Length: 212
Image (tube, rainbow, N blue to C red; front, side, top):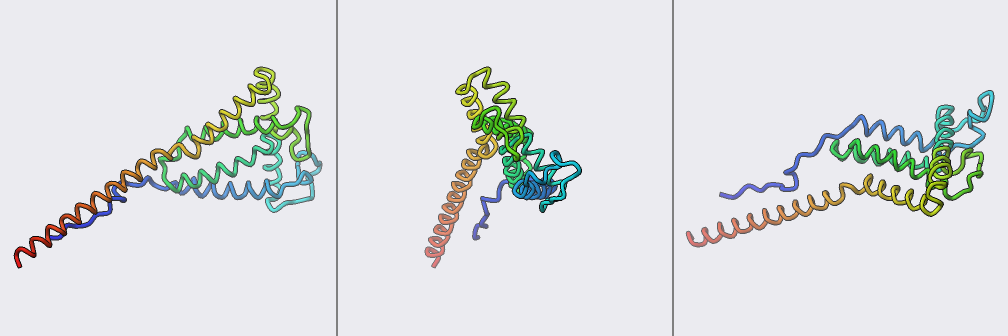
């Protein structure tokens, strides 16, 4: 009898999709991206009393959100929609990929990113977009107020960049090695299965030839 073929690539069960997280992160990331991209200091509710009449596509809530992000994180706030987009990808790929450690590493990446942004301007640098500097209040305190006086400019920069790179590697590539190994194992199993089926077909043809 002919051996039944099997799909060895489907031997592992896939983790369930986190639809709630995926949809929430997608909607939040899209809204935040529009709010940050279309924000103008003239929309800032913090600097205008009564509330400014200028409105962006994200409305007054988006103006509050963008102004808060630029104040707290500066230009490093653009990491937020990037991390939210990655959460969407992870949630769709499966729940095993969304871990507490990865989320906490995203938070650490935001903090160190703000510190790195603050490195590129003097402590007194200000703008209407970033009233606390390019790294926001967090970067201003982390770099200029804490690390730079303690370690100096070089030591503070070295520490921040090292931690930041480590965070990005863990966030985006921590599963890369395991995925590559699983792909190689699946490919090897598929080749072995194909070779087994070929040998069985060859043996069957030889048996039929002998009977004939």
